[in-house]
Image (cartoon, rainbow, N blue to C red; front, side, top):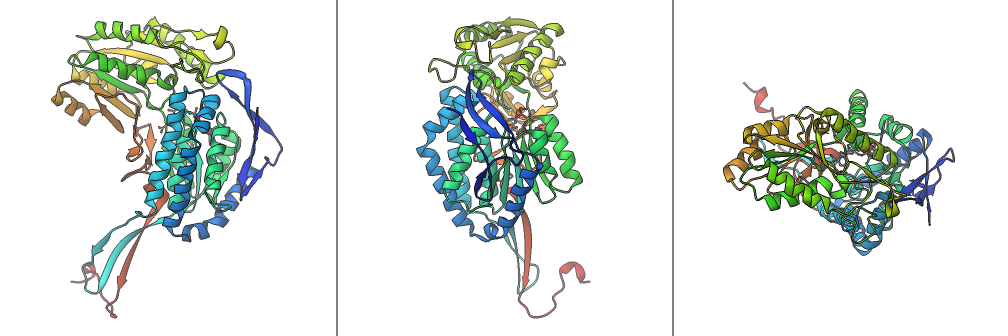
Amino acid sequence: MAEKIRNYINGKWVDAARGKTFESRNPADNRDLVGTVADSDATDVDKAVTAARKAFREWSLTPAPHRGEILYRAAELLVKRKKELGELVCREMGKVMPEAMGDVQEAIDMTYYMAGEGRRLSGETVPSELPNKDAKSVRVPIGVVAQITPWNFPIAIPSWKMTPALITGNTVVFKPAEETPVCATRFVEILIEAGLPPGVLNMVHGFGETAGEPMVRHPEVDVVSFTGSNPVGERLAGICGSMHKHFTMETGGKNPIIIMDDANLELAIEGAIWGGFGTSGQRCTAASRLIVHEAVHDRFVKMFSERAALLRVGPGSDKKTEIGPVISEAQYRRILDYIEVGKKEGAKLILGGNALKKGKHANGYFIEPTIFIDVQPKMRIAQEEIFGPVVAVLRARNLREAIDIANDVPFGLSAAIYSQDVNKTAVAERDLNTGLVYINASTIGAEIQLPFGGTKRTGLGPRDAGGRGGALDLYTQWKIIYRDYSGRLQKAQIDKE
Ligand code: NAD
């Protein structure tokens, strides 16, 4: 049954002002209509931002531990409803059930973690250079935050963004991906049920240009947090720079796994299969490049392709499925185009390369796990994010060459190395220019208690998720307070002879 999905503005569920809607469909079976969704524009955005601005003062003055109690309740509701939410992620986004449940688990972890921050939002107290004076720093909320998210983690990524913004006392205007609006709505409903007051969290559905960009350009929005593709992120960075808004973006990756000649090959293959084909390659941290030492290259390729050939592609709701559909027709065509590009560039296709169109695949967007070998570092399939089940295998003569190839892309999100030599892994750890580095583990699987994000053109600004240098830095600014209780004018040391 299709749901009617509305905007949530100032504590009320409302249709888009212009009365338009769009559809969200199941990528495994496009006959299945998941939701009919409000197609919003600048008018709806303005109402949502106005509500968020109005709610800001009271929310920012609510003690952070009380804000945390609301998030604890939300986390508990997520735990209770995990299965139902997982099934929705599977239906609307296409993930296989264990991964869909994982998406919800990440939101649970994040919500509990940020709830705890309500009692930890600490600054520093330092000694003053003068007597009878003290000096401290406190985190203060910034104001109205606009959050724009992609479809590939339809509950987890909204939780990365909303929970830190809310715990720190900001109010939020949220535009989820147009591919997964029902998942986003369920998460928002849970936060509301947990007790968020009207206006504190507002959701506006719609498309990037008509709903997302007016949000970014709105003069009453103070902070913009974006996760999605690189060209959109860079465009929004320009707008925010010119309007002096706080901004963060986390975008694409072209994440490598280096497999050295002394690697445990069975382990490396499991990592490469999971990283390359898990979530149908639609993770920003997907292992889309394997850089293999020449001494083990042929053996690795044989074992890897034999293992990949066994992967079962189908609807995520089928327990036997290991690889679900890709998200949309547009993405399906894009991936198939990249496979043609790879062939034309002279890479050798050794597995897959086709769409699956019969039987259980007839009404969805299914693509075979695809492997190219003899890929050269400057080929487009080695440089550009494909975001599908397509893996490029490159050859390297030694560790130095492997690291140079790994770093020779515009992105810098995640990288991994498989080697049993601690000295080699230490060099890789130091020299890989990415935000995340994994040793003897795949490129995917980040944990929420550390910041998540990348270097170079992947990321800009403070990172998502927890820990020092994580999301709290995006949603707060420092206020420095000096209190002089000497009762006389005391000049700072710089103002004395
Ligand atoms: P996308 O850039 O097309 O869309 C992301 C969001 O931006 C959507 O909500 C969309 O409506 C909105 N948007 C599009 N144009 C806009 C505009 N002009 N103004 C404002 N908003 C606009 O990306 P996608 O296809 O949804 O997601 C896939 C991308 O996301 C991949 O590149 C992937 O690597 C990246 N991603 C990155 C991370 C990370 O943390 N680094 C995590 C997940 C996904």
